[in-house]
Image (cartoon, rainbow over all chains, first blue to last red; front, side, top):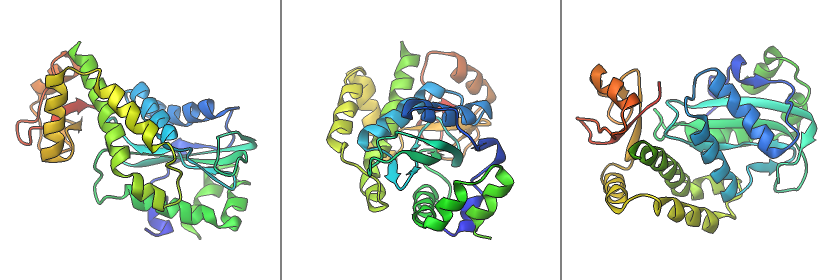
Length: 153
Length: 111
C-alpha cells in the first residue's frame, strides 16, 4: 500500500492535535471516543475490551515515540484510523520504554473489503520508521498540515 | 441473558481474530510477548458461555471462518445479502440471536 492509498483512511473528524490524556488508559479512551462521537462505533465497551486485550498480547507502543493501538472488531463495519498527538508524551509501556508522542488507532472489521487492514498497519510502520516523518508529525497543529505528511507530498 | 451472550461472542471473536493474525503483526514489528496470556483470556471468556452456544460458535467459525458478522444498513457484511427490515428491528431489540438466512452467520447490528 502506498502513502496516497493510506491517506484515504484518515479523516479530520478523527484527528486530535493535542491529546488531553495523561496515561495509556486515557489515551486509548480519548482516541476511541472519536470513533464513538462520529458514530462509527455503537458499542464503545466492546471495542475498548478488544483494545485492552490487544495490549495484553503486547504493547502497541512500537518505540521511537510511536504507538499504533489496533485490532479487528465485529463492532466495526470498515477500516478507519484516528490520529492523536501528545507533546508532553505518555507512558504507553512502549518496547523501548520511552514516552509516546504520536498515536495512530486503527480499527478494522472482521473481514474488510480488499483485506486492507494488515497492509495499512505495514504502511504506517514503514512511514513512522522514517525519523523525518516522525519529526514533521510531531509539529503538526492541524489536519491540513498533517495530511501531506501522510501522502508524502 | 442471550443478549449478553452475543456481546461475549463478539469479544470472543475479536480475540480469535487477534490470535489468528499474531504472526502477521509480529512480522510488522509489534510485540506479541503476551500470546500465552491472551490465549488464557480467550479460554476464560469462552468458559462463560454455555456449551451449546460455544459449540455453535466454534462450528460456524470452522465452517465459515467468521461466526458473527456486522450488519450495516440491513446488509449482512459476511455475504452482503440484504436482511429483512423486520429482522433488523428484532435484532436490535430482542434478546434472541439471529442468523443470516443466506450464509448462516450470527448477526450483530451496528446501527
